[in-house]
Length: 131
Ligand code: SF4
Ligand code: SF4
Image 1 (cartoon, rainbow, N blue to C red):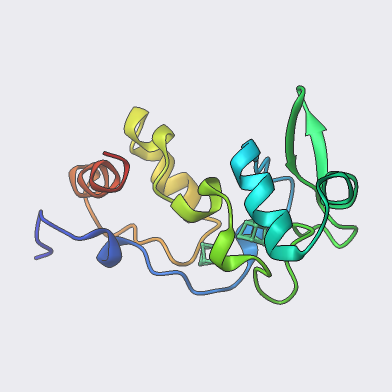
Image 2 (image 1 turned 135 degrees about the vertical axis):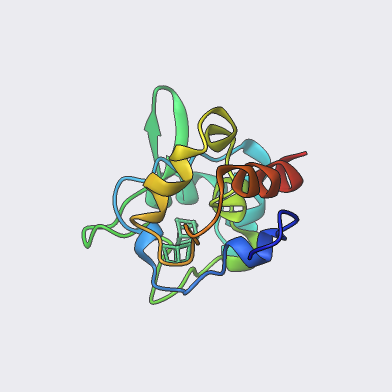
């Protein structure tokens, strides 16, 4: 039997398939993240905003390339050490605390997420990461 005190690392282990970096992900960026990423890439803010971002509802998010992937994806995340919080936290996100079923929905598109666990174990792990 799997322990109720499952660690987040036991619940999720990235398989580096890149599927979560494909499609319209809505990866929003804070001003601090924009600054950190554009410095890492050696780009001025104006160029970074023009070439790597798009606006949605007045907020900047990472643009999607023609191949459907995040524009900062190239066989792997090219900004791994400075990637935004939304990518860093995946799949431990707030919406799972609202409904643990969201974990199972997300897992259908992410092979790194275990589903042979209880809702309690899922919520417990997500809370450990988010609080
Ligand atoms: S879809 Fe899941 S397993 Fe694949 S790269 Fe993204 S987080 Fe990792
Ligand atoms: S920033 Fe990196 S981890 Fe986030 S969607 Fe783009 S390629 Fe994927």
